[in-house]
Length: 133
Ligand code: THU
Image 1 (tube, protein in one colour):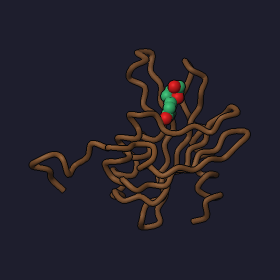
Image 2 (tube, rainbow, N blue to C red):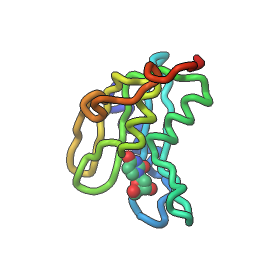
Image 3 (spheres, helix red, strand yellow):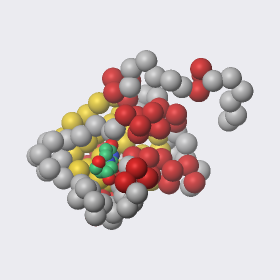
Image 4 (cartoon, protein in one colour):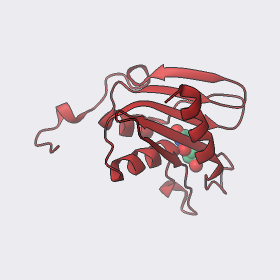
């Protein structure tokens, strides 16, 4: 799948964001190694701390559909700045795709990062004993 198509999927997902408190809509699309695409949007809650980010929602969506290995993540937000995933989402992404490529598009720019530069010195499964597949 072309990068532009993946970004378009993230943009579609952004339209379904539930963000009545922040008004900040985020969409995400994960391209899995098997070529499938799994999307997510942010889902806020009246108990604010229960909010789920778009990237974490996309990972949960992918995992429940059987995809655990990812090549690329696209994020779309509104506003001038292309944003990188929040710290918690970086950790969630690292679990399944430590080398993930991340592309982020705002109204005004597109940026790309590798997850290793966003999450240096990661805590990961290799550090935990007794892990299961
Ligand atoms: N948000 C995401 O969906 N992903 C991020 O990486 C950063 C923040 C959402 C959470 C909340 O609904 C809104 O953006 C404002 O923080």
